[in-house]
Amino acid sequence: MNGFTILRSVQHYVGKIRTMRNEIRTQRFMNELPADLRKDIGWPDMYASGRRNDN
Image 1 (cartoon, helix red, strand yellow):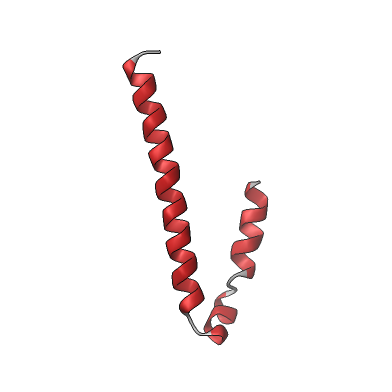
Image 2 (tube, one colour):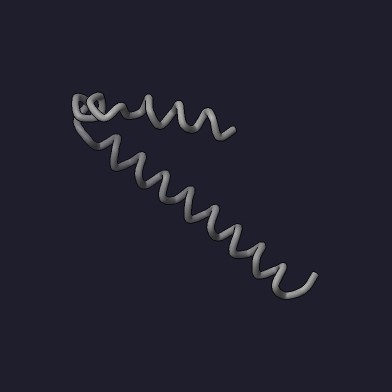
């Protein structure tokens, strides 16, 4: 394994961590909105259906 492969693996891992943190931050922000506003934008239904397709 050369240095570039290790660096690429670390970058991939850091990218996944960053994505997970951003998703959590977004969920917290959206859940703080009033219920009627969340309903108007389709939260969490739109998010949940999108996550189901990722698995």
